[in-house]
Length: 405
Image (cartoon, rainbow, N blue to C red; front, side, top):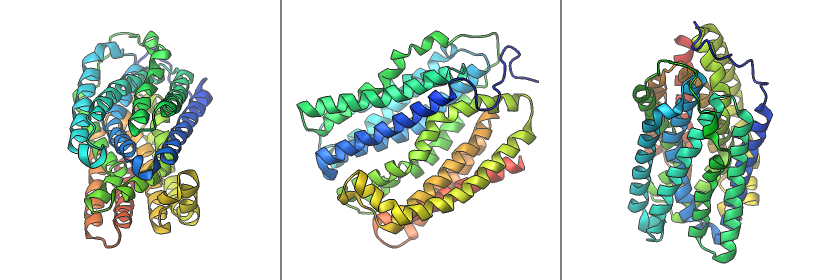
């Protein structure tokens, strides 16, 4: 039985607006790297450390809290519900993010933020703005307004870069770039996303508490493993400069995964329709193909990281940020494994089986921490070894759950 008789399920991935969505996602990702490259060259690796810290912390918060919020919005809106009926959910996620972000900044104020309390306000406003942006993306994608999602993503990058260059022209300081980050999510307001948030009838909600609670647990493990990896350098006694260098490496290499986060709302309505029609065999076939391709890309990613990874990092950022070849290879392979697990996990999201997703990512995080602690070598090498180990376990666990269920 279909989830909603009033909605026509999407047909494949050639629906109107898909190209604009992909182009907007690519443009937004590219402009984010330009923004970071400008920051590292103008401020230096050490001077860029506050931006690296706030970007890392916010990336974790966004992935843990806001991506699940977006996916919840996409799933429910694609079923004919309105996010206006779930305003409390948005506010709850927003408040949780503000508290978590403020605690992080206050805790690391002297170590990473030069003791400047303005970063507490910056982080809070950043979370609030992006909570609106991620909700907007969910509403637009759920209504299959894919072109407008692309415009939101592209304008976000433009606003951040233009604001950053303007503020740096006035004062060369890390806080100037941080304020530019706060401007970026206003792109969602410019698109007036709320015009498309309409209910198509009385449809039973999936249950925000159960869906989001388990999904946030899964995302927490996933993002501590991915975005929190550079913080592992500090935990292992590495210097502030080495932390900033590892941040640059992970930020550059996780480009495929960042793009997946931006575009996965394109495939979720399609998978939700298949789940609603009880097409479990079709979902399993898609998952097996994704996992097979991902295994190959994981090996190729490690090889490319070994051969040209250090040179690319030095060219785009600075010679100070150049990683060792082994660190680059392990990180690149780990990101490919993480990307595979993320795409495969969309099948579980479509079926509202986020608890199973939490188990897979928690297993990966546990393995990563253990391997990082017991391994030997420099802090960056130990972090890279633990990262790859954890991502391989997560990918294998997601594959096992999907193919056996």
